[in-house]
Image (tube, rainbow, N blue to C red):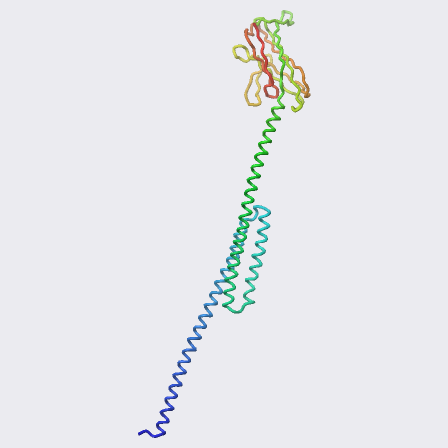
Length: 299
């Protein structure tokens, strides 16, 4: 049988064992709780870093994306300046969060909200940019259409003016002459006796055409279709305004004043029987343009 002292010592040992066990359990709990706290803190810090990186990247990307549209129009540049100012203001708010908010959890939430707001701001301005671009596209199309109409009107006016400024020759009178032995000419109607054709016509008045010296060319085509001409007597060729090379029988310079004037031109052959009988076509060109035409018949 145990004595009272032995029983008291045994109880004390039991109490110490229980206390030691309680202390060990408490230490384990505190260690695990501390480890969880540290892990949670580290996780929040990591999340915060990620959110900061995302926000900074979004700021940079948004600026770059909007700047791609600069220089298209003054209205668009003005809108981009407004957008960049708001983005800079948003960036300043985001950077001030770190010093104003100490709670990591709240800071992370605010960072996420700032990122969402920034994306909304970007989408808003992209929508406005799109609207301006569409409006600008419509204006460009309308401007091109008006420019096309203006050019067409200009061309029509130039064509009309050019057509109106072409000088006209009318009222052709043709005489055929025989050269006598003394060198004098007498009028004849017979082809075999003809040595010279004298052609007179009126150059009509024209207030649009430029005044000054004008080169007048006379082309004569004989009945067989051959152009009449003799280089020894001054015949040669010229190019029309359309680029065609034409043989002329005679050429004369006139001083055109804008008023109607009568012009006479002669073509002479030195040998006999150089004019076959038939109908002759006479064409007058001024400034390279066909001014008028007439005919004559040699029998």
